[in-house]
Length: 119
Ligand SMILES: [Zn+2]
Image 1 (cartoon, rainbow, N blue to C red):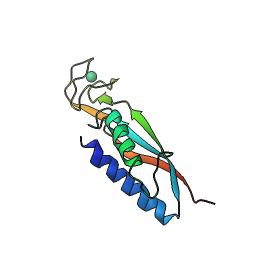
Image 2 (cartoon, rainbow, N blue to C red):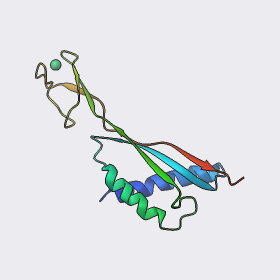
Image 3 (cartoon, rainbow, N blue to C red):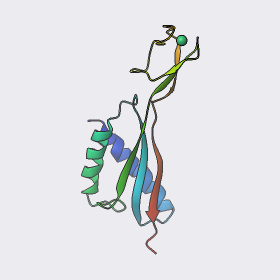
Image 4 (spheres, protein in one colour):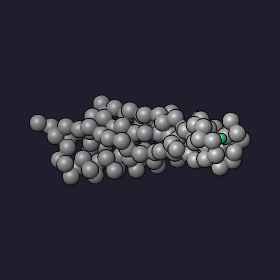
């Protein structure tokens, strides 16, 4: 399950940034997961649940993980038709052109996080 190491990276990234801002507790982390990013949101949640129990400095059981699911979208370079592809490489359902541009769906990133400085 590579979501375990991805979640670990997210937590490190957020924690580092939060420390710089003198944040004492992270209350919410927002992550964007594209449907073609090879990341399973459910597995990511399980990984997060595991880290919540680890007694980390900034993240505990009150920290919320919010996963924003990004639907994949492709655009045909021939006819301009936009559709939701099942894979990175897709045929245009209208003209069967093979050269389609993946507009979105591969995103995997921390969108934002919220925290409090304890005051
Ligand atoms: Zn087309």
